[in-house]
Amino acid sequence: MLLGTWNLENLYRPGGPYGPEDQAAYEAKLAALAAVITELDPALLGVQEVGDPEALEDLAGMLDDDWHLALSAHPDSRGIRVGFLSRTELSVVADSTAFPDPLRPVQADDEGATAARAGRGFLAVRAGDGSLTVAVCHLKSKLLSYPGGRFQPRDEGERARYGAYALYRRAAEATALRALADALLDGDGRARDVAVLGDLNDEVQAATTQILLGPPGSEIGTEGYDRPDRGDAARLWNVAPLIPAAQRYSRVHSGRRELIDHVLLSHRLVHRATAAGTGLPGEGPPGLPSVGPDPAERQGTPGSDHAPVWVRIDG
Image (tube, rainbow, N blue to C red; front, side, top):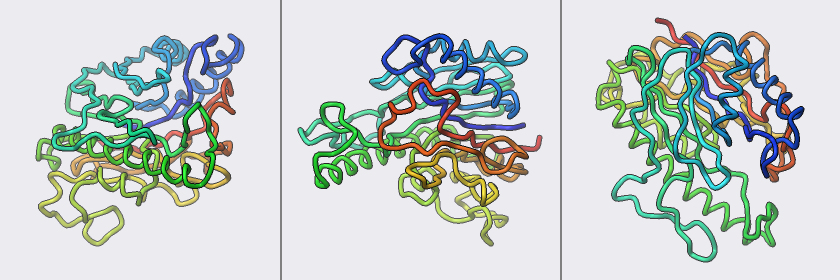
């Protein structure tokens, strides 16, 4: 069984402010995405940046066999949301943006506006016979925007402040996602197949990513990995160490390779993981474009600026 996550980058039908300009560009984008998914052949794929629900249906229609879809009912201000493509039926168990009590709203801009909820929904589903539960997310981006729709700051003070506001948001969202993971694990990660995956918009050692792991210790590749301890019931393991070092990135930002898309597994799942990677299995490091601070620069471009991240599970 292969589980994966992929940011599809602005999956909209043509004609809107964020999608391709025309039908030909739209069909080229769908064809590029479909070719990757077909080759990847996942049992379950978490997706991000679905702008039009109908566009995900169009994409699924280009794949082999019948696929089951689930989408969050909580898009952001651009209309993008998270979802799933699955070869088996899905049942939604959670779809929320709420911050957990007693976490308070966080500052979002210079005018004192606050964010009291996640910008995009966290969606959790049970797949197939219900033995596997998976949550998908898309946390606040590190690509900053400024008042008036600007992507460049007026000065370095503004850059620093808006970087802080984005970090506040991402940390609060990670805390909310960890609360959802706690509910899905229900204190029994040794016996439950639970995965949390998505675009975390930060790297493995980032504080916001680390929030999601739960109790520290027993990371893959450490001496404690195969030693049972009390944290196993609540812990999530990032499969990043299983990814070959040359492939350990899912986006290229200003020429720098970053692994910002992640798959986290419960104790029962991680000890059945046999391989992990980015891009397509067997093809080496993914060839990705380098993106800059303005996400509109790639509007209508085929494919995605992210590589899929995947893990193979036995049984």
